Length: 239
Image (tube, rainbow, N blue to C red):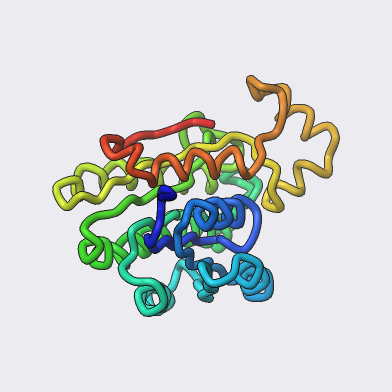
């Protein structure tokens, strides 16, 4: 038996980067995975790569209609949802003074409101499954702050949301934990990676003095979603 045999998993932002690594990891552990993303070509290509245990669903996380359709597609293809990985997110670089209101709203809508809508959409499906696990991706920036103010605010909100969900839904056997990655080598941080000076500054501030890999975070997500973490909820995990 693998850890997620016959369980249905939704991974948002699943087409590339950390999301794609999560999707591969869950399928390798026996799960049926819904790769949910706005990146249709990349998402469908990954679903084809993963075979019968994966489907793609186009999901704009800010749309409650898209969320309803994605959960329905998951249930129709594989059965009730047991795991939600709130991974979709964007970053906009800049301080408050450098951030236009439209950019601020976009970051909050995708990073925070999108996760709220996802949790709201899957709770009834998790009840059908007899319980479930929600794993959300925040950031170290949500704990210690950064000069990317909209991003930090959205991720700080994600931490508070995840912990609140943990206390509210524990009696329904629904767990909620949040991962706070540091600097992870993904397409989202390409602007930093392309600047030797900026990249070195980030690596110097990282205890292990290297960028994390998407698989590093996937291993944590797999643990938190598994029965091995059955007594773990409301946690905030830095990596």
